[in-house]
Picture 1 (cartoon, rainbow, N blue to C red):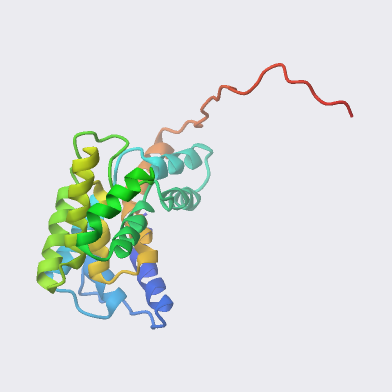
Picture 2 (spheres, rainbow, N blue to C red):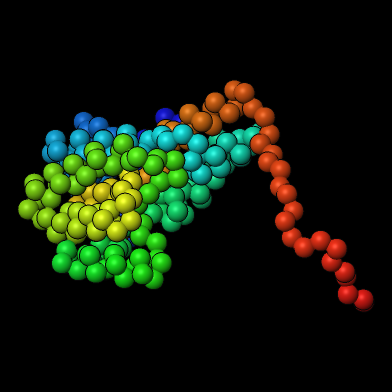
Length: 249
């Protein structure tokens, strides 16, 4: 598990560089896991703010009870399959847009809006068309996602340190309008999107970063399931039509 947790950032960073037509960067033994994540992605030495930002994000995403991907890991282990197959199941679940993949959709929305003056109109049109606005609400939390304020602070800090406030300004404008119109609040994925964008992670790898952080949480659940394992076998009730006739022939 520790080996995979160390390798995942290396794999994600190498994948990003190859997609950009650049050679992978070897990790620097003097850097932390978070620092190396940035270094292997950009080839630049991270400062203290960047290292702390990535480290905090990895911690915030590391574990979150029995969400869809974690449950998928436990279901696979329940069959006495191997550790890596369970992790693959977790990855398959977390990439969905209603789970970790939501972070991609948030940034796509910001890119589409492009200017903070257009945020309110975008939200109003989306709500009128009954389109989902990614990054808001939570299956469990009703009073707020405790992780979200930390990511909002990180996004603001990066915007101020880089002098590029565009995405943070758009994010706050959308957040305000959604709260006014629907009374729902941003979740962990919402401000994680501009944070990763500021750090230079390609949009199509945002969910990979979330998965690389969640490895530790998945591993803990996997080993817990192995230690006290039972086959996970939910029941299903038929709700279809009854008394249907088969056609002749």
